[in-house]
Length: 404
Image (cartoon, rainbow, N blue to C red):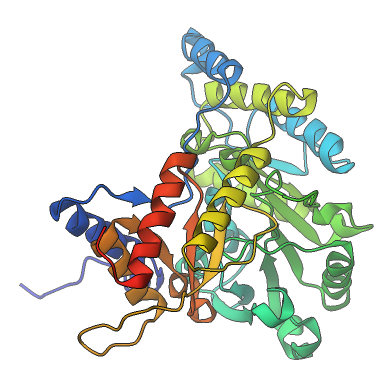
């Protein structure tokens, strides 16, 4: 029998191996008797509000909720999403044609290139960037063009340094502010410039706004659709995962240009049957609570955690600039007071591994998000304050080469 491979070579380009590596490191630390404090994956540690949970539980018991839902999402949910866009950003959208419901924004990010591109097309994605940005292109047979995001530019792309040929050949350009992993924010002048480029060169601007409700120090993240005429050339992803602690429910939406939204809706009509109706009902309640002020904005929680954790790390000798948004800290590598026995250098992956197996604190090495991420680690503020203080204490001991 001839040998055949039953595994696509595309999987080698997904770039998710680091998360499997970190899982293995966690097992190693646990076997050594350490209680792991996991600040790796950005999964909220708080539940949705009681009203959201009640709405979900009541909807689950309704006998008419178990047929196939619509792949584009219920009209009721899309109408509520449109009301929320108007309330939050002053943006008017048509729930019929300019919104499609998603199984979380990752669903849309994973499938957008399949819906918009042909094999061989080029798409511009940020480096560092959320892993699904590039992974989705690999699945679609699309060529990524990496847009470097560097500290000296505030982790914004240097638009003046991008050759016109890049913009001319790009099918779409994907950015996200506030950004994962780099926590940077962007203002209206930046969005005006990138929208103008989209109009000039004819590419679609795709904005990932999963962290819209996690701005700190008075920062209120904006929608690209607030820019005049942006709907002609832009779409935007929104997620209820982080803003409303509904990560496990898998619900979000894409909003904006009707042609691009329609393309994703058409693809999804062929590959899934949409979000469970009970979850959409819970999502409606969550958005209503956000608009009514019935819940404390999640940004307040993460701002408190940020302040506590950054101060605790500073006391341990690791000085990090406070992020202005998101649930993450994008931290330059600390100055280590000791050297590795094998003579290896302290790069982001080695420092993350040694921190986990020696003191039991899990973070994600920056190179997992692209080559420009080397020299950083991403730390998720997804534990209660006492755990964050303990993590900072352990990290300080690790930096000094002490036992815990």
